[in-house]
Image 1 (cartoon, one colour):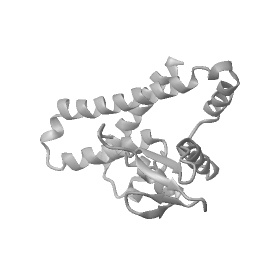
Image 2: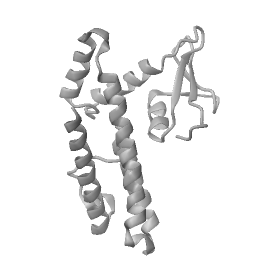
Image 3: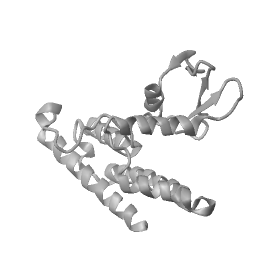
Length: 187
């Protein structure tokens, strides 16, 4: 998100309907999740009281994805979150999670920069389209709520992808697994 870009303001009316102040229309939780996946920050406030309800609604979005079997968070992470509430003073969990996600975003940016700088394929026609696909995949994976990827069992023919794109996807998966392994070592 650009630093000068303000969060998208969503107002909650007494009827519990959510109103997008930029487009002057009502939105759903799924619409809000879409804004976030696109990289947009949101702020949800109660129209009457002015209370910030953002955290409450973001947790609700995660809970809805979990209830549909999308497994946003592994059970051990959920257990750690619950335990962190039992520690006097809230523990270190919030700062750890924030730092971990910041590090993941920075690693993603550096990886994309390195792919551009060191890749001799950059001169091949069609490389830009392939790079855009990889960036979209990484964004979906690190966003935590991405719906564009359906898991490792997916057949290339279902996607209409060629073998080269599958190899690139496998390379991205390996890099993501390495990043996850590095993050787990920080614990």
